[in-house]
Length: 278
Image 1 (tube, rainbow, N blue to C red):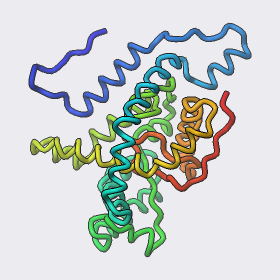
Image 2: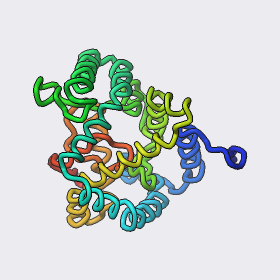
Image 3: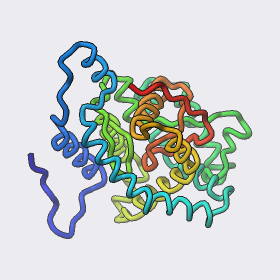
């Protein structure tokens, strides 16, 4: 398998980079584990859905090094330098900027009621909420925030998740969610504008700020999770899959986000309820 690279000095568009990552992940990681022959072992193997576990664990360990030396220190610095009210305002504004993506996925899922909430939130927060910095829709009108992504849309259309993957920096994922991440980036009107006006640097800055802010929100949560887990890798895998099931079913997630780069709605104060690892 080969992946064509752009000429020297040119960069792949972001969606092509993510697509290439998904292709490489599928090609490089395939065939890393053999399913058990006995029926009971095979059933447990299929339920865990992590046939690439040896490679996923290696990527997870690499991510832990990156997190220890880069992501976590950046999150600490962010919380020390930026006051909490300002961090909350920036988080709200970043969430507001993603509204067109949430709306598109609401509509593609046939969730017209949630689409109406999304439109109302955008109208209220973009005006009296000062470009989304203050969540007036929730605080004044009781219209609670929600997020939608194309990975969830694919799930509602009947697409299977595929094997569990762990991608450094991105975190826990699967082929369906990686494809959804690429699609959400491609359909984002702000990204269209920035790409077409040679301002792609703002896309990367926005992604970086989102990742740092979310990692900062999860500092205590992930530290506690790691300290209390017999196997941190297995715990994160379980938390991620439970959370995605809740999001796809439009239930309030029981766990905080464990994908620091792609999640814009980390619910660091929610209770963690982890099913026993299999």
